[in-house]
Image (spheres, rainbow, N blue to C red):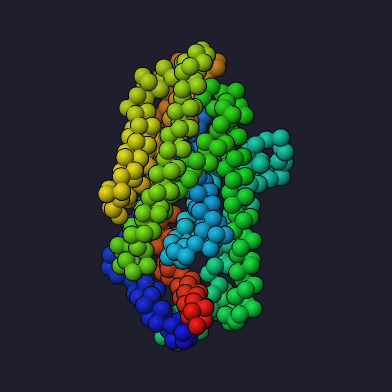
Length: 447
């Protein structure tokens, strides 16, 4: 195989993504920026007026900000875990979807922690958290875990980008601005795709894949401990750490499937993102949905069976004030994906994507039911019994900032796809090189 010729062919194939911006793409980016601007205005109002413009009060000190944080960190954990597994076991079809997963991982770790800052009433004192950290505090360990995970995932993503940066640096057919070419040259760090460089890069990424799996598990476990190490009814549970990990995988796989579908349709990548990728991801989602359903049942059944007064009050709140949310999150959000994915005939690309959408929405609602009803049923009720101080209802400020966070995630993803191909060209070449080598070995064995 002529490697140089093959590189030129791939650059020519993917160059329209990097060179051209359609009117639809411009409108898409403009819409995302508009949502972010509205979010910035909402943040300004919250910063000036304090948390009184939100639905958070003395009882419910956390709202949808913390739910979004848990959700995004769960997606990042899932992405890190899956991409690490794919690389470690050298899965052949990983090249088509690995970059999508890695970008989702890093961006989730960037956007997610921003929601924690929105929960802080005095951002001017934020630096005290780093100057005077309390090693006994799980929040301190959470910050350490998330920052370590972010740095590790960013390095891992960059390492996988280096061969493509080198290809884009060396090609003369790509019509991009000079500054972009210079960035490709800088980021390629002199990579020439020699045998020794390939082996060295492969060993490093192999080691990083193992490290990322471990870091992701630690980060999400520490996040779960922030809840479970309290005596609060609904949180004080010994299975919260594995429950959070399974939930993170559940939402993460769902987001990955949705991303695959959108990118496949938008950029006409049916040649690379095939039905087999959706079926594989769908089967993984099926297994995880069964585990997630089991953990959810165990969590609520143990509370109901124990007949503890505080747990009973929490369940009464769930089944009275949040009955339909409970049904949607823990029945529809689990059983519908299982039914769709269990039967082979139903495993089409569209149905698998639909199951993923249901799973993601159900998981977010499940996180809502873990946080809000628990805070609405404290050990010692506050003296002020006005409904607005006891019960939580999110305001437009919170929703504006939530959608702004999602828009920021999508905008960054879109800009990255304008800078580097979403399908790794080096991965395609490596796969073809391995296939050619395997065919050659088979021929020699036959002879």
